[in-house]
Amino acid sequence: MNASVYINRVATFLPGAPVSNDEMEGILGLVDGKKSRIREKILHSNGIQNRHYVIDRATGLPTLNNAQLTAEAVRNLSLEEATSRPLELLCCGTSTPDQILPSHASMVHGELGNPPCEVASFSGVCLSGLSSMKYGYTSILSGLVHRAVATGSELSSTFMQGKHFQEESESAILELDARPEIAFEKDFLRWMLSDGAGAVLLSDHPDPQGISLRIDWIEMMSYANLLPVCMYAGAIKNEEGTLTGWREFDSYKALGEQSVFSIKQDVKLLNEHVVNITVARGLQDILKKRALTPDEVTWFLPHYSSNFFRKRIYASLQSVNFEIPEARWFTNLERIGNIGAASLYFMLSDLINSHRLDRGDVILCFVPESGRFSTGFAKMTAV
Image (cartoon, rainbow, N blue to C red; front, side, top):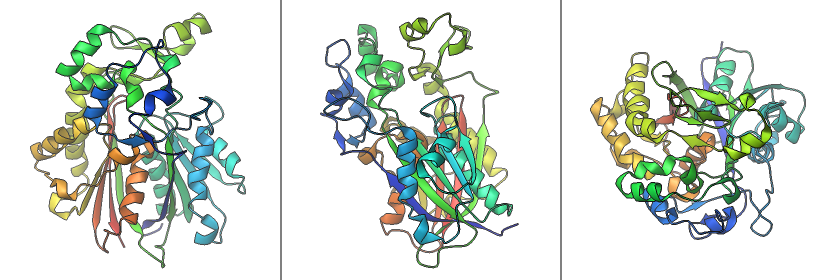
């Protein structure tokens, strides 16, 4: 058993040049040859100013796949400088793998070409990146390995291309002003998601050359027993709330006609439950196991997909007597967009590189997932 586990390095990779709000539609493409009438409203609500895509602006084709994106983030860790020992464990999480089989981690290992090692893949939605980190953390904590690399990545832009969407309905446009959360339905997700990858080097000892983050604990909870599916792809949702998966369709043609592989979200469920389940209920349940007060938290790193949810998260923290003043929040959604499973890695990287971390600072990370409502919190200390 090891006494502690440390994040010694954090690295990220963003493909291509930043894409501004005005450039998005030219890269993703028009729907039915028409410009979007709701794009500006969505962007005003989510607060994102820039994001990155693997899509080439000239050809409309992807320049990298997800495994290649992830491998670039791992290379940016400069492992050969950090340790003389070979990598023992590679853990990779994503909600947008390049294929169903082989596993995402196997494909990343193949791209890296490093010597044989254990690999572990994690699917799901945003929590897949934190799950990846936890597997590496627990493997080192138990003494099974001395160091590991964990990653989170997303390649969402190819899902978001105009050719995959239908023309916006008049009813949806009218409803948008009354309910900003409508932005999370299928036809509007294309203005929310982006591409990128992050990686961390985990070790059983801190880096003597600079700041390391000691992982004090990582806790995740699923509430799938309470609520039906909210966010999904590769299926359609039936009236009773069940899913019909892609393998149950009669033909591949039917899959395309019904946009089975598009990412979709049940907006009613999301609006009613995402904050109270992932913040209030989740934090209360985790604090039954882990002692922590809001005064101990120096930096709060919340992953949220849109600024629409920021005030609701704050209010939810207040409701369980865990108010963290917004001056202690650290986010980068506006600059890089919503990169799902990779978002936490980018926040950690930017916080470290901001030179605002002091020895002893306590970081509380929060990652919600609306797939079927799960939540994750992680406590770290700068050393």
